[in-house]
Image (cartoon, rainbow, N blue to C red; front, side, top):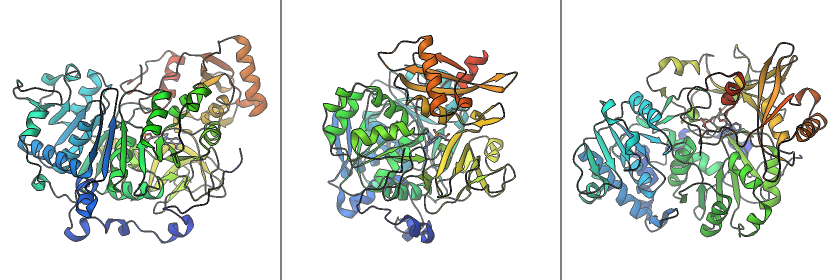
Length: 571
Ligand code: 6R9
């Protein structure tokens, strides 16, 4: 596919090259309270700051699910988060305590999360789908003191096995509860909405603890500090291109880092109207949401785009999606086929962004003002240096595959892995660099191309093959909805390529179809890249954030234990 040129217009990052030359992070910090008081609170900067600046009546949150349809102004959010802060204070929450939030998306999730940050707690958001063992291991590891949850999820919290857990706040609790259980409604009613509960923090004080999506093994508690907001704020401007009148929708759940960095901090630090849609994905529901709220900026993930792409053509034709002006993607490689689809159906480029739970915010991105090479993650944001390095830390020439690494010291870089100093230091084993664990190359124009997680790269008959390239080609085949590719050990070739494929509706597995797909890859990509084996599956194992778990495909193949499956999306 050819390069997609930018549309003419004025964007928040108008001159990439010049900004890259002149920008420094300290310039951003200066506009928050930090510059006058030396202290900060990310929740205050998200909400209260805008009220103080006269935007109290602006809509902050547009929430809906199948039962509720509500909207909150910045004024209302300020009062509600202050009340939540007073509630936490009364329940003895102190600066640095871990407060976990375990519930489906709802306004209360956002209110309690920000309220806990207001009193200086380190918040830990958990996907509602986690079962008992997953919940337990995270609460245990973090020594959580408080959990906010719902009656329905309560059976999954083994309270008696968690000595540190002192307080359980039930969103749908009632007057009859006795400690350690508290009713959210009752406690909120008893709380003042003044701002005296706000704890003023240092830039390096704890903000959030995200247990990673686990696409590579046991979940780790990635610890971020308040200073991360500097990068959330700035990338939301440059990359999401947010402006005052935007209606912004990030489809991610706060249980995943995208759902906090860009579902909470990025938009609200910029005072933007934020759409939250509860419930599960369906193409109709998603298009309806864009139409209903006149969404202008939409941040989602390849897995969702692929599902929308697989829906019948008539689905999209029912809706008016003309409000959209900017579409972005994160979480997995964005197949060129998906970019092409986006261009055809929305007349917009889909902008890929690359980052990780550990990096806290976007690092390599495509921008409205820059050309896009479909299949590439784009170029580093101003203020960070990304490179492809070898095992010794030498930078590799363009087009050579190696470790994707970042020069250390960006604002939203993780500061610790909770309780795991050793794991933390593994990321920094090459002095001066953060080593991401992803393999990539950089082309002569400075664009980065994702090749795979380090352990996903396949060596077959002496050739190094990135699974992503083959998967992208596979999904171009008319019968293929999704594909996951692994290397299967082989005595002769080292590894052979095996593809797991979910078919689009209307197609049935058959040997002819296998042949046809293999021939397709041979003629379109390369003989050595064609999967020697193909297995059809109803669906592929994916994390809740939509990443294909190649680790699980490998374990299936080798009849090995699949390891930690707490983050698998199995409904
Ligand atoms: C934000 C997030 C991080 C891993 C990362 C990489 C993969 C993310 C990507 C991408 C290709 C992109 N990843 N964005 N791969 N292109 N644009 O996803 O965080 O859940 O921690 O995952 O996801 O492998 O290392 P997290």
